[in-house]
Length: 207
Image (cartoon, rainbow, N blue to C red; front, top):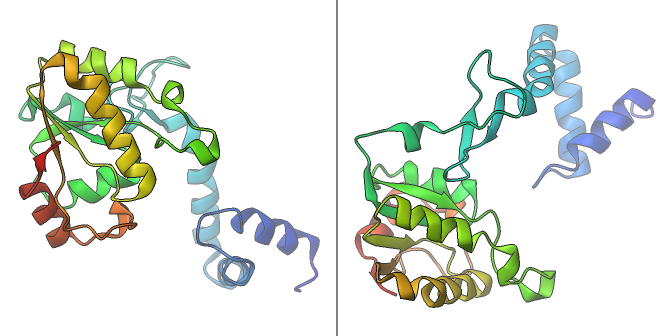
C-alpha cells in the first residue's frame, strides 16, 4: 500500500504543509484511509472551496469570509474590522495572520489590526518596496489612528521591519509602541502562550 500512486500523491501534497514531513503526511493519509470515510469527504469538500469562501480582508489583510452570493473577486471585510466596539484609533501591525490570531487569543487587544504579509528580509530579497507601507499610511490617516503597536516578532527581520516602520510613520506624528520582551528573541508570536502575549502587549514600550 505504501507504493500506491494515490498514496504517494497525497503524501507529496501533504508534505508541502509547514511542519509536516513525509512520515507525518503518510500517517495522515493512512488515518484518513482507515477512519470514517465521511471525514475524508468532508475534509476534501472544505479544502475544495477554501479559496472561494475565504479571502484577505481588504482593510487589514486578515482572513475574511466571503458573503453568500458575493460576486467573484468582490472585496470582503473581516469580523474585526466590522466590529464597531473596537477602538479604530489603536492599530496593531503584525507580520502574518498567524501573529494576529496569537494576539487575539489573549483577549487583550481592543483595537484593530494591519497585516503586512511579510517582514523586511534582504537575504530573501524582500526590501521596503515589497511591504505595503503606503496602504498602512492610508489606513492610519483614514481611521485617525493615534497609536500604532508594532507587533513584529523579536527576530532580526522583525526588528528591521519595526525600525523601517518607525522611520516611515514618523512624519504622521502618531504614537508608536513596540510589544515588550515577554516574547523570546528569535521566536514566533504564533507559538507564544496567551499569558506571555498579554504581558507583551501590556508592557509595550515607545518605539
